[in-house]
Length: 441
Image (cartoon, rainbow, N blue to C red; front, top):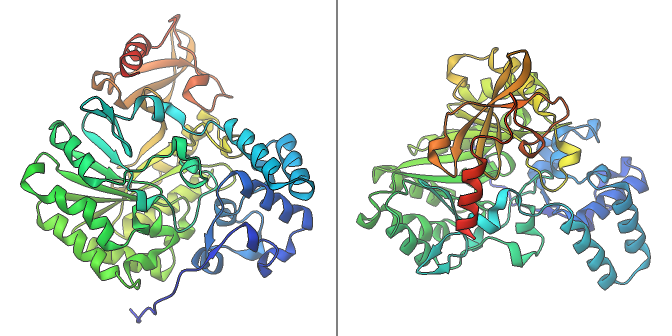
């Protein structure tokens, strides 16, 4: 393939809304709405997203535009009007208070992440770590708590807006290592964020290299969660330490560990550029695998045709389709959410049109308080129409792959909106879940 020239990353934020020539086709009111929502939810786009991925002839309907540029409808009309008024009339302290109040209504940390997922070591909570499932620990490196561009639907948005009291970040890599030494049941470490691939190779290696030593033989898999494969593929091709990153990946695989790059692709447009495909080729050359995942998001990828094309292209390039998630109950969920029944219908129509190699994908999945709940389908049992559900992961591993049933509800968008079917008063796991949560407090 032809030589790809290095390109320097440039960022655009709220201050650039009125200066970006591509946005001048929007009305002044629409541009103000973008600026207002950007006070509450994080907004950052880079030159690759702006110049290569967004079709500016199709805004505001272009999916990548909606993925990266805040839209006025992401907030309630009341909150949006209040923000616009304060931006135009009030002191910065007043605006800050309004923004904080609005954020508090957006469920900053869903599924009990703060209350129940942070473990303890020698009686003290371990900052920057989550341990929800026995075999998997999540690590949040401080230097990786940003992204090359922010997704408007992101369920980790509090990481990026200065809400330090509920931000996950670990400054001391030695502390999480001590925790892992004491927990031999852990086989998988997921380095996440933010996006760890915003870190320099030398910083990322401080978290990864120790796990290759004899103290951590129980760690079989290292995962890196990243959107960089879609939003800044130059990270693996022409950035100044791109080769250092690939050499780090090679050291992981040569040490006998499985390295999984958890690539976040939300639309096939993110995988069709030359640089995006070269990044995939280079990552795979190290022995690492790329597993792909995305939420189902209204107005962006709520079509089976989008998923068919995306999965087929991913398989062609050697990636492994992994998850279709249901959008979490946080942030601008009302703008993005899709009813559970529609999510299942989209998944079912898409999965039947791809080959067996793409049917590695699981979905639609809700990553909820008790665990990862899979929507297996719709059935009729004793004359009652029900959702058939099961756990892929649970706070109690014994819950996994045990079918359970919820009353059919064509409006429900999340697990908490479902009720037990077949005359049951509660789902089979609820009593145990209460005991687990009470013990963890």
